[in-house]
Amino acid sequence: MTDQPTPTGEGLRADEVSAYAALEDRVRAGRTVPLTMAAQRRGKPPRHWLDLTGEQRRDAVTELGLPAFRADQISRHLFEHLDVDPSGWTDLPAADRTRVAEAFLPQLLTAVRPLSCDGGTTLKTLWRLYDGSLIESVLMRYGVPGIRASGSGRNRATLCISSQAGCGMACPFCATGQGGLQRNLSAAEILAQVIAGARLLRNGEIPGGPGRVNNIVFMGMGEPMANYKAIMATIRTLTAPAPRGLGISARGITVSTVGLVPRINQLATEGLPVTLAVSLHAPDDELRDELCPINTRWNVAELVDAAHAYFVATKRRVSIEYALIRDVNDQVARAELLADVLRRDGGHGWVHVNLIPLNPTPGSKWTASRRRDEAAFVAALEHRGVPVTVRDTRGREIDGACGQLAAQGA
Ligand code: SAH
Image (tube, rainbow, N blue to C red; front, side, top):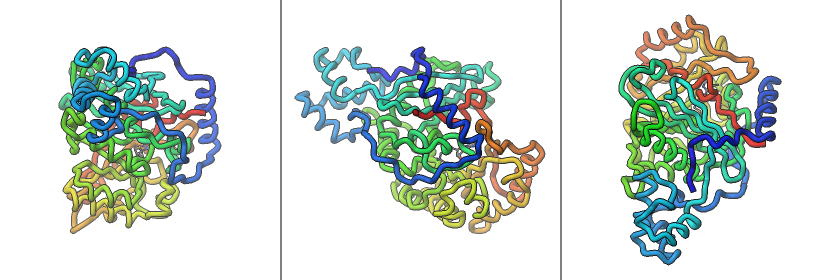
């Protein structure tokens, strides 16, 4: 019953290895994939407790012939104790444990291959789903004494999770985007990634002592806004207090989108103070049409307007993600244009620009900016009063950094 995050020794199957190779060939040949807005209808993962709302959980246990109070017991095991293996739940009669396991806790994630770097403080896990699709999640712990690669500052942990198997947004610089979309994940498949990461930290399996997940970022595989319903169900369970959820602060959750404007507007009405990150990558439509094909549907002006409206509705500062690509989008003139495009009410108090040195995907024609161009880009933004930081590139050597998540089934 467990979603074991520990090595299984299974490794990749031959067809999965060849899928990786085929993806690399496609990228090398400079071929791009078409934009896909909706996932193909595929089989759904089996019903899981993590997909149910509070009310559905009570109905589900009574349907099974168990008293309604079992619902909170089950949730407590999952959300408070992060224990997904009912065989040890001694507050339930043994026979009920088996029935609960069979009815509500099918194994959704199987760890195929964990990879770690940065002295063990960055851990990427490749998961196989029930239908053979592959996804990845990345746990990054910061500020661990004695491990320089973990950086300085407060000891905290960020978990980067996937919302889809693959991605339909077709951004040509992103490995996931070049693999196309396999399917949407269910809320349970997303939440199971969080529970697995939280358990590793709680159990002290990551250097730095027992800890908890402070931040959750939807920056793994997939476009979260293209899987809106599941994302909202996930966020509701992440933020619900125990026993109904994981009790994680909405302020610690970041939803990153390439720019599905109607969904940004919808998120602004949910009354949830989650952080919005917008993957802009270019301030002008001509270049953004190329870097983010969705721009041909909702352009820079529409996207920035929606992001600003999100700030007005939630008072949450919006992150603008900008991957710096050598000689493509890293000119000072573009930094200046970016500052202009983001100016609202005469200033930039509503945004924070996050520059990401491009992680080149295998064989790609694009690479990261030169140091001096990066510095000039930063300086041009700072000069115009735009809050800006350059993101670290944790997990690079295990292909766990932004845009490198390329696992895909055959
Ligand atoms: N679909 C969501 C989540 C994508 S991953 C979105 O577009 O926001 C999170 C971030 O990594 C996005 O900003 C994405 O554009 C960026 N990214 C993708 N490929 C990258 C690469 N090769 N190098 C650097 N950043 C990359």
